[in-house]
Amino acid sequence: MFRKNSIKFYFVISASLFALCTKPPPLSGLIDSASNNLLQQRNSPLQIRSYGDITIKLNGDVYSGSADMEWKKNGDFHAEFYSPFGNLIGSVKADSEGGSVMIRNRTLRFNNNNTLDTLPFSWGKQLTFGQFIVFLTGRVPVDFVDLNRVPDSSLIKGKNVEFHYKSGVFDTKVNVNRKSMVMEKIIIDSKNQTGFALKMGAFINNMARRIELREDDKNYISIYYEKIKLKQ
Image 1 (cartoon, helix red, strand yellow):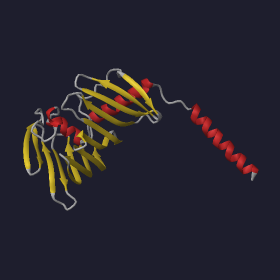
Image 2 (image 1 turned 90 degrees about the vertical axis):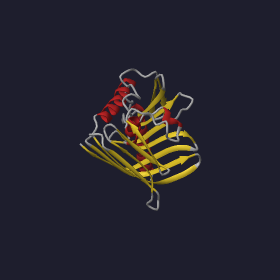
Image 3 (image 1 turned 45 degrees about the horizontal axis):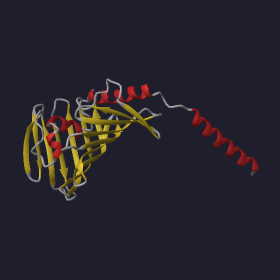
Image 4 (image 1 turned 60 degrees about the vertical axis):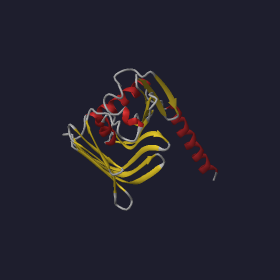
């Protein structure tokens, strides 16, 4: 018994010392890793197909169900959102020039460079239709995060390091695992009075499975893609 306990104790101490002595990569390496993750997002596959769950909360009213999304590199996009009973509760369709959003049985049309200011969400005043499509695919628009520069600040938070990038309109926080060097979460906060927060996480193949556009607790869109299929 004594010998077994001694072996266990030795193993625990050895593992603890190894963990303490294994240093995570330097911050410069983690910055490069986050930058590469987003650059790989922008080297888009030929096709993205995703399935999952969606919750839309509008002025306190909750609509929940399933999400079915497909994007192609030529710009063709469609996403349908269904209630648990199979009824269509919303949809988004687009091509390389523009498209439409259907919500509450009302269809609104936009060009890619148009802001979504006719949607019943305040963030529509700051997002273009083209940016909205990129978000729905689980990627970050090119003009939202400039990772070709040193972050304005960094903060070590347990197993992660959080890089903070400030711009004129948005504050962006990128969380990277210090050991695996994998990007785990991105939070983009708008500093405008009609602001919003965009949260992306649960990345797989550099695509976010969890996406949230939040105005406040009574107005937001939350999507979780259980499956993401990429065609290269």
